[in-house]
Length: 147
Image (cartoon, one colour):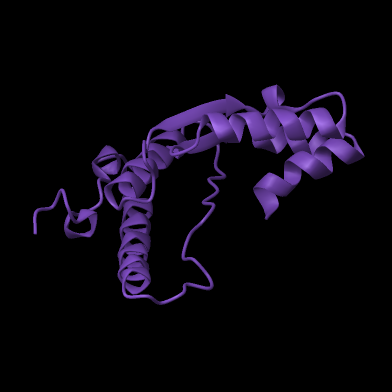
């Protein structure tokens, strides 16, 4: 079987992280998760039901310049290599762009961003600012980073 027909036969692409100081541990962690995801895919293909997926929503919380965007891009490529994402690209949006005047507007903005990035990785930059929002908006937005 060719690697094109079977995405699990290829190693995940974490090459964007190779050689970046401080990201060696992150690269190993991603590679470990990819192995688990590959096993999950094989179980699904054999008819098993996966009740708790290994890694649905990775969250990257570090200071500016720590490699969050590169790591998210590497995760997107790895997920695409596994056939879990159709595009695998990294789409970034500012947290401020996702806060509306009302809870309903915030929900619509978030749903639109998620729909626009279907098949890709959505990275919300500066999500920590949601911790300082008034009750309703902070609760709506913050649940994306806490759940």
